[in-house]
Image (cartoon, rainbow, N blue to C red; front, top):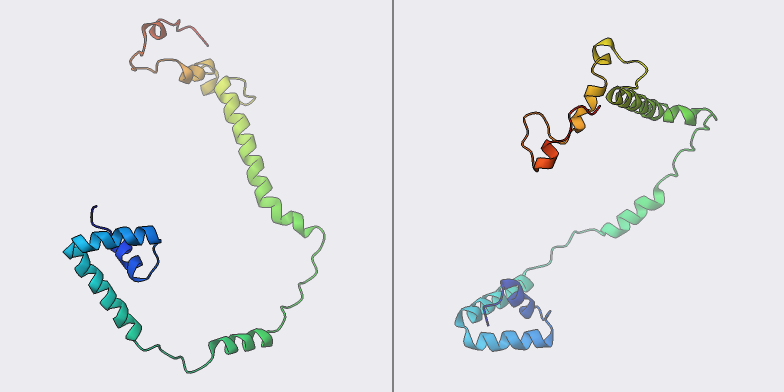
Length: 155
């Protein structure tokens, strides 16, 4: 058996192991002096920690918290809201969504060449803009010969 981890030895000191695992560790400790010394050091550390004095606060923290909670005033009554004010809170979100939708439709129209407001510089290059989806990009290497021999006159 390989040497156990320090966490396992610490769990043995704290009696937090199953009986089967505890028996296996005890068998190993009889044969391994290094692990036995480490276990003795962990037991000594546990005894030293248990011997430390427990600090006292000098006051009852729980009682003070209960008193604060009891004395706490209820929150102020919420101001009445007008019926139309809820919609104004959603206005920036609606405007952003509408702008995103409109720009997406416009850019999609430019890409396909069907956009209503195609600038004159892009008017001639409308179908050529779809060449982004060619099987082989300009200057790219062909993965297969049948891809390289596709007709280039596609829109």
